[in-house]
Length: 193
Image (cartoon, rainbow, N blue to C red; front, side):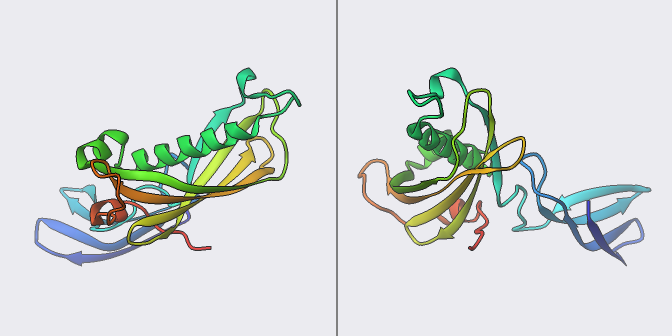
């Protein structure tokens, strides 16, 4: 962890509350980039409780994949359509990590559909390459969201492609656009350009 700020205040004779705890680290898919918590000291032990509205997962999500033989086209590199599959899988995994798996959207009877994709291919990916898809929500409006992506080589960080997807939120029964519920919007931190 890069920084820890703690301010101790006595709430009761039994428990001491440490206010305004803020942790920062390099974001990964396994650890949050930042976390705000209340820390209580009770009987010599520290207990951490997330503060209301804090981000528990990284704003920029990393999704890892290995290039497989079936991903390769006649030119000997990853087929362009595979990048779309990686993007879709990364978006779904990010949503799942934020507490919105497919089943939860099904229960809500509403969810995301793609309006458009934009991809700029910069370098090819080849067999036996590992790739990282970084994805984040760049904009969140009333009924739509813009998600951005960087697709990188996992060994040296070379950017293979940059991309964006415009998503729309629809009612599953009517197939019409509908307002993004607050509980969905609140699950994602917007990372502005």
